[in-house]
Amino acid sequence: MPAVPVSAAEFEGLMAALGPFGPRPRIAAGVSGGPHSLALALLARDWVAARGGAFLALVADHGLRAGSGAEARAVVGLLRGAGMHAYLLPLGLPPGPRLHERARQARHAALLRAAGEAGAPWLLLGHHRGDQAETVAIRASRDSGPDGLAGMAAARPATAALVLRPLLPLPQARLEATVAAAGLVPIRDPSNGDPRFDRARWRAELADPDGTGAVTAALARTAGAFARLREVRAESFATRIARSAQVRPGGWLRLDRQALGQDSAAVAALAALVRVVGGSVHPPSPRARHGAPCPG
Image 1 (spheres, rainbow, N blue to C red):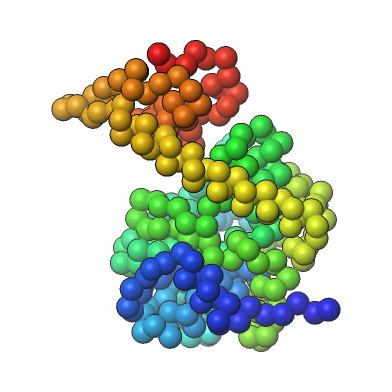
Image 2: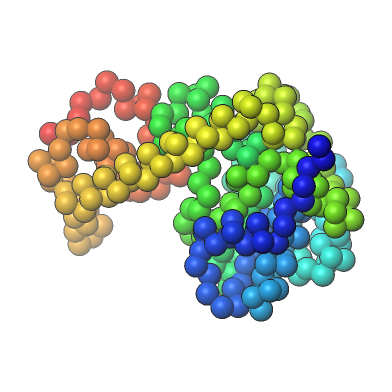
């Protein structure tokens, strides 16, 4: 049976779960030109227009391949032809190790910066059910622990905007059907299938291009279950941090070890403090903490 395009009412429900947004919202979205982010742009454009707001599509040129600049300009033209305000963000990455990871980080930072400069407090990303399944599989292979197995969050605060992923529950087949129904032809990045990258290898391993398979669905459900656990844990160790940590004049952190405790919530709270104080994106891995004595 052919996949059904995502309706305006369905997208409204997905966005409502991530709100509230207030009247005339200003929304930005990262758009690569592929079918999934393009579907997001189409749905968000209409959702914002119905509320009298402003929608901005942001296209990052990572510059990792010859011709990527021309492709990014073509995506901007495609979006503007569909009645969207669209802007190109050149990343200008230097060569070197971990290029793919650095490109992802630079793209994310550029999108957030552009959203902030445009006065858009929400940044939408087009990750879908298949992306979530791949994320859980990758993190499980790296022994990420329960927080890592929660996958990508549907809503996550960042420096300049709240990052939202409204399409996480949806299989990619429905997003491709949404783009086809609009009469648009997506621009696909060939590096998405490059086996040099972890995500591409796991995508091939899962062998579910439509995102409707049983394994993909099970991995996505796993992410949902661990995400609910993460919320409960976060509340627990936030309370523990509030009870045990004080920021003193001069930026010093005073930690009451007795109030912090010695249980798993104490370990999670301490890991969160290490991440914040150290300026890291992620907390220390379970492997890094394994065998270390609990504070006490």
